[in-house]
Length: 95
Figure (spheres, rainbow, N blue to C red):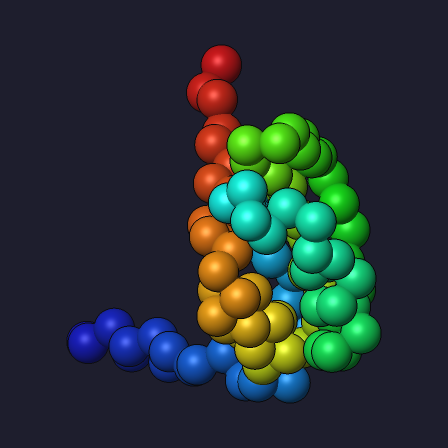
């Protein structure tokens, strides 16, 4: 008897999602209010989890909550502005 294949479904644009990201800003962009703008331009909730900002670089760990499509559009917008966006990889330590 053959095992039925699992149905793979794509994430719908309206499905709720939470994404944790590292944002890295070059010096020329440090003073721009990107997180404020993302929260107003897109239907997402922003949550700063960690941040370090100096004259040379800005590094922010940011959570974005919202519909999958809105989160994806917000990420694309940040990248178009010159912000380097990388997903946070949460590792599990086996004990």
